[in-house]
Image (cartoon, rainbow, N blue to C red):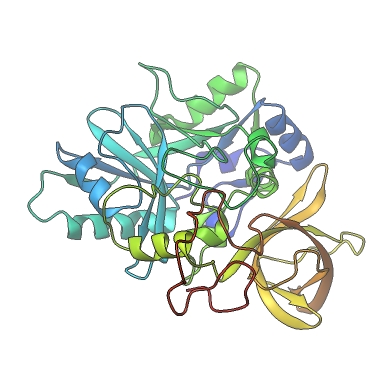
Length: 378
């Protein structure tokens, strides 16, 4: 559904997974700078919202997802996956509980399917699942804090902090670029969206579009369900065990793959940050091929123009791609083949070993690779 804020003067509509809100409002560089200094508000009403009520909700969600939710306290933000039996990411959602219901914030295209899957899984438990996207909208704020008691329900994105039970493949929190990106989503009644934005503008915030949010997300190495995830994705490839997986909780669908790759194997692919050559004034689009010596080794999943770094992107490439290799991004732009040079920043190392991987106790199970080997990942 289209946001009423698209009627603002200068608004340019976003496309793809951000359809329904503004890409920018006429000055994307100024909007991005305002967001970076903590003085902006962003219409995120294109996101999906699922509400799970009932006294059994937290234990039930704990049992069927990747996150430890059994004792989640009200107004404490976390994140979860719904995984396939093979450990591939099917759904991802931000999670916050208000004491009466658990709220899941996800991509709009996933809200209905996620609600339907949860409904099929409830059996005789006391839970009630509602796709609340038509009633509730999200506003993005550059704030690193949970919602205050008595205030609107808020999901705080704690990325890149490693949550309890999680682990990391990428940089430590003290040097991770995402540590400089405060971000939270405030849920408001959809009919109050314009008024809530106006109140924040009156307090000094500038209205920004998704050009700004995507540029800062890419800079922060922050994976997104609608961009970095495909039918083969396991969380390790995207360094997403930081916030969305608890490695020490009980059994859930897909747990075997999570534990096996963490303890013994290596992810078959890895997320990289790319500095794209902007000298040709042509920016490839998400979905373009990533090439090494003319051979396809991955896919550009996100692309943005950063107000300081210029054109940047995230890509998922084969783990075997050398970390210092100069890459080329190739795709069609306006019907013409375009190739753009790309320099890597390592997000998930090619070694494919997490920061707290258990020490090996003996020979590895057949089919699993030791660190530094070139054997299969799973």
